[in-house]
Image (cartoon, rainbow, N blue to C red; front, top):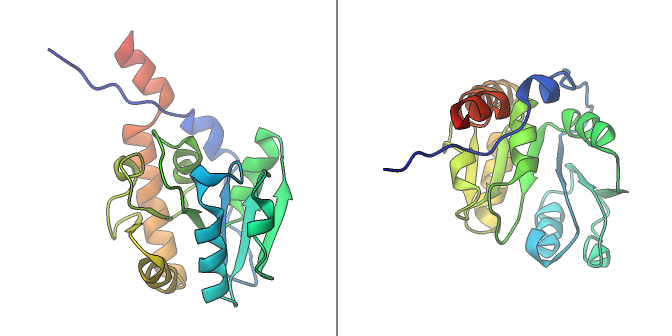
Length: 181
């Protein structure tokens, strides 16, 4: 017999960083190493195709020069507290990763009620219910379509609420640890 006990984050703690942002411009961001795994080349290509959107990358790494679109801001490394505050200010969380296990950055964004746009890879699939809390994308056009859909603030709010529900139900560390015990 087997039992699935998911990894997770402290949803109650993370969600305390959430607030309703007042962005003048539509903002989309990510967090993590700027490395081959996170596919900064794709992130840059998406930013270039969406010049009216502000993109943010929280983190740093060897492939930083690949993020050269004028609408990308790179923050460098931040503490956990600073990262959660910055993610809370995004309208949408974007993951362009080429591979993942179960990505904590997406789960934290979900706990902050963010819609998710991510690459359609095995590790991201458990976090996204297609067209409910986000989109799984196979190519640049898929990412662009998702970005356009989520320009609508009402859609973003609906998707964000669903992200929080999923994080609370499936990826709540405290609940999952009780199951493990």
